[in-house]
Image (tube, rainbow, N blue to C red):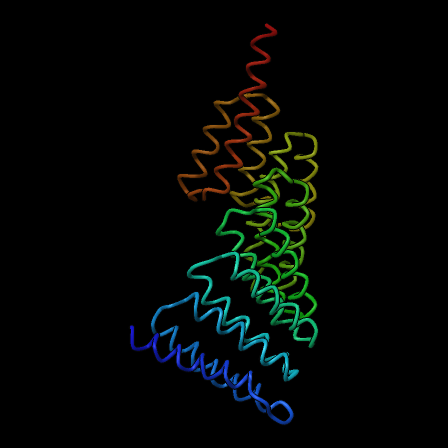
Length: 289
């Protein structure tokens, strides 16, 4: 590993020398770029990720001097992928610079891809607000390039996190929109009941039984097959349990569904919120009597 680092340092020194030399036109930047690229590769082989990242940033700056924005953007992406191993903050900064350049040269699908990557980094840091913001940006860019599948994946992430921070209406609108879109696509039709279930769970978290009943009617109008699904039955039975303020019924309904279709942690979290509200109502009733 030491040998790789030494070679990386040699190429870096030669690149810096080249930059400080005098030459016609942009040839010194081209030569330096070539040397920085080699240096970065050796630092990667040595697993010196910070050094490799910093060299890729220098490489990006050489490409900027040569007005090669696409190459500069790719160098910032390479820097980010090195920094990912040591500093999420640096990785995000480099990806953001790459995104700005891809936008400038009209490579919107590339910008979308790296907005999504930024969102994933924020997600890994549990920075939900920034994750939502960048998944939304990625979704908009994917949509503008008509990459619907990727756009919907990002939108679902937005909805998932919006519900997590109790922005239920925002989540509902996204899930309903994706369900509507999916109905027109034979490959995606099967997923409609899942999107409507997610929207319905968010409706339940809002705790308005009338709104839930109205939503279920709308979902039947949207997809007449929905009323025959276990997902519909779960939502309808929970709405009934809420209306009757019956915690036992709620628990039985959820348990039965879970025994057939195991609930993931996101759905479980939302259902626990609904149950807590229901318990609180039951306690209020007990206090009054």
